[in-house]
Structures are given as structure tokens and as C-alpha cells.
Image: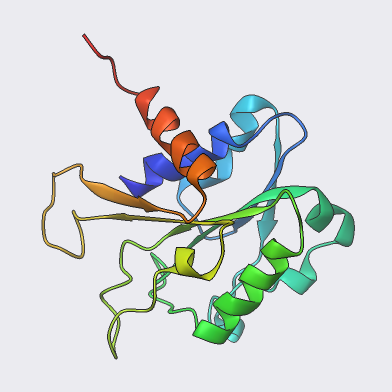
Length: 170
């Protein structure tokens, strides 16, 4: 599922110099995977006052410069917050401004929002990887079928290789 894929990709794109930005309300794997390869995690505060949308301006400049991965999930689980298109666009602009950064976004609940689904985040930039699962929004619990969408072929190949590391092929 997406939780596992976020962890796999975080590990695949990380090393001991990596900082991953993770909201402080997250799935455990999102906040721990980078540490498995010696990298650091910086928690981004989410609060009801801001609609559970991350405030990247609160991140110290030196941390933002060293960040290689930003992990998000919207509509957000467990808060249910929906990120406005303008806010996601601003986040993608920040990611694009940092040459080694990428956004990993779990969009499992993308189609379950009022007013129809948001555009797939990966359509905004080559540095965005959208991940989702058919198990929740499509009512197929137990099926381990999902999507990894990116405009960057190398990122896609890394995603396939990372998934392959978790399965034995006899």
C-alpha cells in the first residue's frame, strides 16, 4: 500500500546526508524510513489553525536546503483535511526551487473529496511522485494494488526497483 511505498521510496532516495520533511501527524513509516539509512527527519507542525496544511516557511533555512524528500498525504488521514490547490502549488514551487528535493504524496483519498477529485499532484512537476491505493477509495480492501505516478522516468524506475526489493522472485 501507499504507506509501504512511501517508506520504500524514502529509503531508495535517501542516504546519510538526506533530510526528510514529514508532518508531525503521520504514519510511523513516513517518519522512520529515512533514519534506516542514516538520514534525518524534520517534523513539520500541522495544526487545526492552519487547516492541517504544512507551513514550510516555519522550517529553518538550513534544514530546507538539506531536505531531499517532503512526505505528504492529502486528503489527510487522520484529520480529513483537504489541501487547497493553491497551497499544493506553492509547496511544489518550493520543491522545484531545491534541485535535489522531491515530493512524495499519498493521494489514496484524492477521489473522496467534495466537489470531485483534485488533479493528480504528479501532473504539477517532474519532482512529484503521487502514490495511491485501490483498497480504500475504490472499495477493494485487501487487494494490494496501487499507483505510482511520476513524469520522471528515472524516479519511476527507482520506484519499481524499490518495490522489487520487498518481494522474492522464484
